[in-house]
Length: 392
Image 1 (cartoon, rainbow, N blue to C red):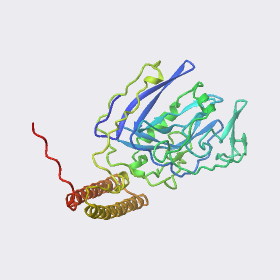
Image 2: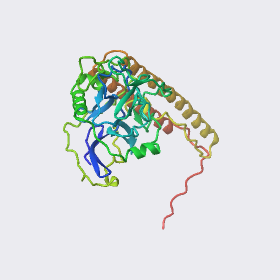
Image 3: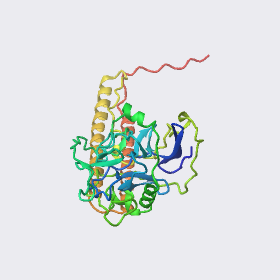
């Protein structure tokens, strides 16, 4: 497993799944910070019969150390009867692991992520195959019935309005694969087709689709066909949530080679992120550090001195808690203001550097004040004398 020093990227490896004797490779990227929330956007009209909706998702580029948005698009199914299982990010062993999407006869597990337009966390409600013909559910799919007549209308209640784009971990979707989804994972699969690969590469090479540039609100959220980023492209109307990228997310400078295990490598030998995930030398935000804990009472044998000591530390602790909360609220307001206006990557980085400096200075000052209070504690006048060491 290769590790990028000085970067938030943890590992880049290749996972090979063997399914009924046929296997295909998935590039599994593991990152120490989660992707942005899913943006809000409309679905473009289906271009022709046989196309299946492939929802947009956040991918990660290790060369720039940033997430980028791969717009949702309509893709022609590679074979009759195949459906698309979207990719998803999942928390595992202290990092976010990317699971690639695939084509198969049944929609498998995609992290319980609500991508919308029929992908509401489990299965697909946007259409179904019937005797070699794909029928579209007009209740959730944007279809022009004058051009496509194989349609039906079944309303679906979408109760999950969460736009979180990852499974597990802090704030992630709490969903597990069903027995049917586990069975689907063992069926014959086909990886993304060439049009999807070209679509993803086009998105990766577009700087405006990077999360640091669009703050979770990509200017190209969906397209009518793969790699068609101009005609008919749809903008995101809003970010799913304010995006707060970490300061130290950049790449180490070079992209090490990917490790390719043998195609018959057992699943148990697939590399996973280490448990000793590297941490930044100082916290970035006040929300990244715990609030000051209550002082520990002492018992020196002098009740009055102990009470004075406890009272002074409780007052200091209350002051530190107040300052901690004030800085937390101020930094959150900075993030909110930044997300409501166009901001360059340099402006965002400058704000995060200021936040890190603020947090570091607060923690240093609190530690110094606590140490000073301990050293200036009232003496234990009635404390029994310590016995002298015995000499032999």
